[in-house]
Image (cartoon, rainbow, N blue to C red; front, side, top):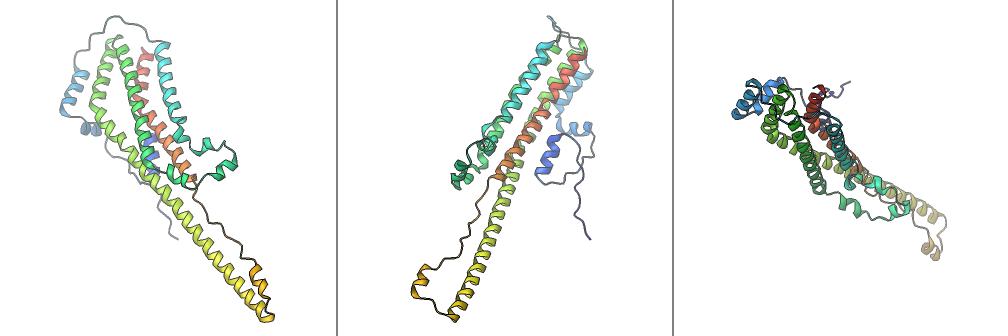
Length: 288
């Protein structure tokens, strides 16, 4: 018996693994080292700047040094919680989970067209890009603030601040390009879920039509047999009960709720990736 090939387990950030699953892609592990991959991303001017930051004379520690304390820790926690809250409480992503608090009669009276009205990926794409911009702005400001504090500490920490600034400048455009492709990957996932629901409805409608045809055929055979025994009066034809109706299945927004949940998961995973430089700077400050 043949078995379906298993996708190889992919290591790396949760964002990469999640996108590979949603895109239904079998992504192979890269055989390149981190240094080799970075060398492909850095231009020659960036490489010179990074080499100077790493090998040059340590920067002069800025004056007015102040100790790292709870203020910076609390600010980092506040920014992270604010961004998580913006993703978790977003009205578009809450969908019918929030509407589910409404009375069941109100939900049942909603027209079928409401599902199709909401199923426009352009709306979700715009929201994803908006939340991405919020993350980039808030985390960028926080990263700059931590670098400024590092520059007032020991020479080694001041060097780290310079290295981080060079890396942010060198990799920023690449990062925006890669993360900017995420909404496109989610768009494919959106369409696959919607098409799957459309197939479900079409299959159910075909089954209902087949059942209704079988019922009509059975009723016709019974009626023909009854007539052969004793023809009914004319009034009986008028009052004869019609076959029981078969309700046509309606489209559901369950697939849309699945997509909303997946989109939230991707946004939260992207937030973790974007916060990694901040975590590194925080670790350096805690160690000083």
